[in-house]
Image (tube, rainbow, N blue to C red; front, top):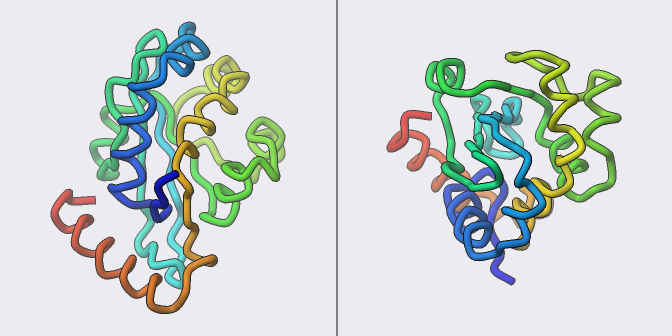
Amino acid sequence: MIKCAYCSTDWLEESARLYKENPKFRQELAKVSTQVGFKIKAEPKWGIDPEIIFGASVEKGELLRLCFFSEADAKKELEFIMSATPQEWKKIMRKENKFLTDFMIGKIILEQGSKVGVLAIAPYANHFIDALTQVEVQFQDDMTEVELEEYIAKAKEFRKRLGV
């Protein structure tokens, strides 16, 4: 299993590639058509500063897009935008916490879209999490100082290049 830093272009590109290669995800998400974004709140200790948004476009289980978005593009293109701290997203991705529970108690904030719409796709959250964790996701608080410095340098470069 390939290791990718959380919140990196490598992570999203490899996750998208593996999703498209695995018919399981298309089958599990066949009833899902949405454009959903996940805002990761700024956490300078993690090299995430300012906040960043990644999102996916899915049409009847087909992954059309998995990428980072600028704030303006996210508001224009995504049906839902949900935000949380990177530590909260880590718990969700490691399945230490459940998406629906944390959404309902306010640990995950809906910034755009309807709550009813989110509740309609919430039963599919674990399938999407599985798609994002087909790689070994290395979170910044699990990195060595050198790895974190390398991540921060790469993040500055890709954020500037992508305008995110």
